[in-house]
Image (cartoon, rainbow, N blue to C red):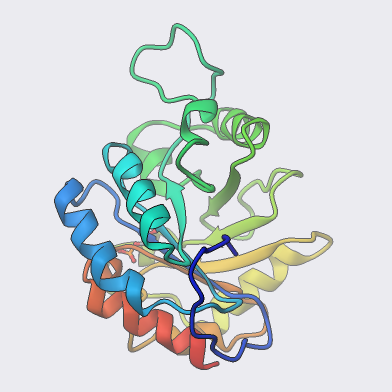
Length: 234
Ligand code: PGA
């Protein structure tokens, strides 16, 4: 949990540490992202539920400033990271530049694997850069057979059929896959894919599931807050 200069109301902690991560994808300009934060931030509590917002790169600096000023208990995530260190890589953003703003970074999302031809080799390079820059990688995998690199602690199971389709996996199957991913590994596993406030609890109560990665439903701050409040209530 990030330090806050303000004293925040506490809520009882759920029996496990949960993550609720908002992935804005390529949505929201700076003003819209700040408005979202202004709605969600004041409602967040001191809790073992870790709430993360992943806006676009162009919003990171303003979001970081606003979080620091208000002292909201929210972590900031980037949606991508260069697999190279700082240097002559036009268009890339190196981990050491991102770490000024972000605590966490999404890596291996299926939209990047599909649209940007990201291979396991590229993804592995990004994880290395994140680690070298003290940013926690959140590795997205599409099934139990997707490569999980040794150094990650946080994984999101996001089946392709469920992303942005309105057809989530069943909580039972998501839990089964999370269990398989955890076999012989010390990791936390989130579920992502068509999560909203009406199905969030089904996933969060599964023993193997440690949180949610939320795309479309995170764009509406009211809907996202409902999901966070479900996590607080468990
Ligand atoms: P969705 O996206 O919630 O819109 O299905 C999830 C994700 O891609 O992280």
